Image 1 (cartoon, protein in one colour):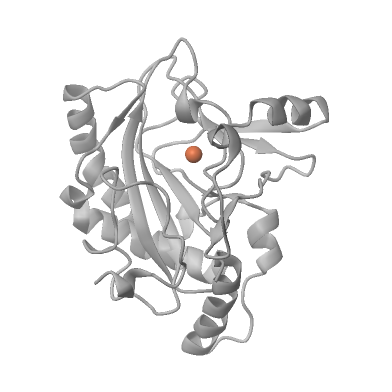
Image 2 (cartoon, helix red, strand yellow):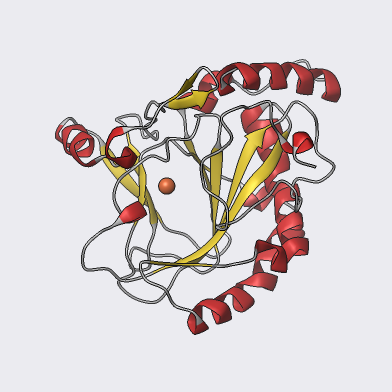
Length: 269
Ligand SMILES: [Fe+2]
């Protein structure tokens, strides 16, 4: 089964489980692939949890720099706070974006650096996991144009631009040319009226983006930038917690999701 079909099954299950009559539009899910998360509607626990971890993360990266990107080694150092953050964020994604149960399969905590030449995710790209996988980037410091704003491609309607993944599930799982970097494509889009947007904002600013939206990170010009990136996947069965040691990993495990969408958290515990 491919992930698009699995998402539809998950939406039906969620609708029944939650006793809902209407779900958020699937068209919006795909056609508006980068959205600002309205954290002002979340409980105070969200920002309190961000404030509780930011200095510990800063200290780690100050002591362990690693250009072009420094990676935090053990996300479970912050289990309580990450659970609090996910309870707000993932709950919102379920009811307002996906219309299905979700779990967190990946959390990346990292710091960006100054660079003379762009490499890896500093180059325009899409992640090329199935289009039903969404990442959520949370700023742990105030971010301006100068300290590494997340940037995404924008169409003429001001919406993010989704690229077709070659990895969709058990019925289609192919490698992609050039590691899904978008050098020529972006030149063509910019020549045809497309633009890009750099997301600036104060600490806690959260951007939810489909992993196949064209995006890049910018090098540091001044200051520093640490982030938490929380990746979610649909699941038919509601997980006991959004995050768990058996099914949520960090940099220690490959970023490719399982080819089979039906292998969700419950098959890993
Ligand atoms: Fe990426």
